[in-house]
Image 1 (spheres, helix red, strand yellow):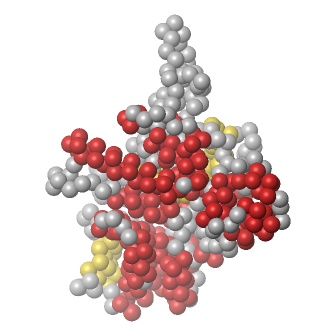
Image 2 (cartoon, rainbow, N blue to C red):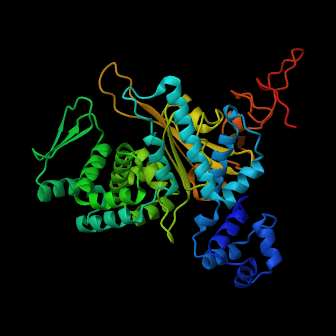
Image 3 (cartoon, rainbow, N blue to C red):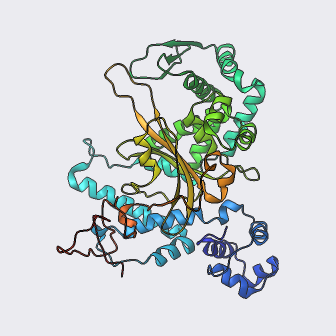
Length: 464
């Protein structure tokens, strides 16, 4: 648990609560000098001391992991490395100090940078035809779920109460939801051809139409989505009100995401699903079969098991299309996603496209030494008809290598020897010997020599 940023996190939390270093040391039963070393990341934190810190500072382990500060630091490094800014180079240590000591200021810098990028795009002729400014609601919605580790207690409580009323086994839940929609809401549920849609709710005609192209598990998910929309929407609207989205578009994306969350919580109740995950050692296919959901739905649910006092394995979740566009992302595993530009081509997220339908496993190590057990596979959505290419994505998950023993995907892998070095992105990676590098790092000068050609990497650069 001795993450590089945990010392700065402890210092920030202590200062926010206006506790002196001497006073906190007394409460922890250690010397002030030892606490000072911890706050400057010069001493490791034992498990017992970590527990004392959570109790004394009244936070959970996630708050002390430094994951939010680490994500902020990654984003700041990307911002400061943008050559268009023409700014003096900012050392990584300063970016880390800003993220750890002044997270509000760091977020303000990121907000200013995003606004500047939008303004630059508008000035370059990429403004909307209506003349409106581009507000990037997709990024706002993704940040919303990522910052909350994709966990919402009020929605969990509402889904559990509704599930208790239905009171059926997972194998009978789809039927029970359909009967509730028919009996309580007077809906007629029909599976029909739907051009360009998967689900259509006709409130006036009291009909719920589902596309005949939807597989069985997806039909069940849409039924749960509709029931949440009809019975638990007030909970969703309350969450959106607290989020204060900057535009109706961002609010709409949040609303759909939260209703999807409700559907997942109803079909995969927190405690039973968490117990099954531990028993099955996080075998996603087995979990999907037991709860009658799709592989992707089971993955997302695993990544949302972050209830205080009953946390599951902290995962990151990512969905990527063949062009490298990230369509979903959130992390409880302190994995620092690159926000601007592509990610590392050596990462299993991208290599999984080469073996459709096959789950690929990788032990990935970032330049700072953080190591993750990652697994990824393609998922294919229904096509609209003959000649229409079905949408293909890779769904990827990962957790800190410390959790490998609880993962079925680690069986047979020598995690110490199977490590693959990856970077956040080519522009932020200092690895000298990467043959997959697409761009040189922004922080180093190229070392160009026409007399020497090497096959190790397309770019040679000076790390001094």
